[in-house]
Length: 156
Image (cartoon, one colour):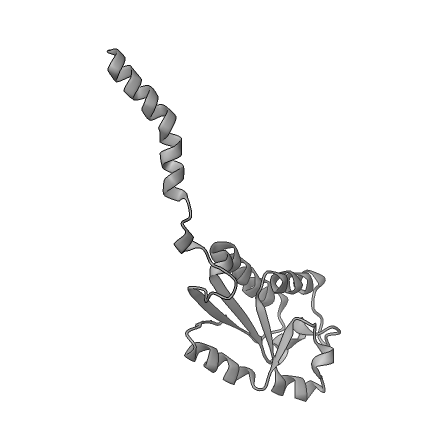
């Protein structure tokens, strides 16, 4: 092997990791800044009290957070029997794991909306909900309005 060829191979070997790293590097244009609209928006309908259903939906929400990070806005609209996951003192059994998962997702920016009609039927006010929960007048209308704003609709 000639010296020029050997030198070229050494140079390639030394610079290849840098070149690969540059391909994966995030540019300023790729960064999401506070206040920027994310490229992805999704709304989940959450309307059942079944723990297996609740775990499945919340797992999907978490997977979306992991996949898209700051480039997604997620809203979970709880209506009917599903609303109990948002209560400080639910009137239906809610496993501790699910309660913890909801609180954790809220800390990652997932928004939780509670149906005002369902709350009214239960005799609840905002004081009955966790502080991170937003009360909406009608859960079904919230689902529709979010879809009109470009949110993808997910239902189980």
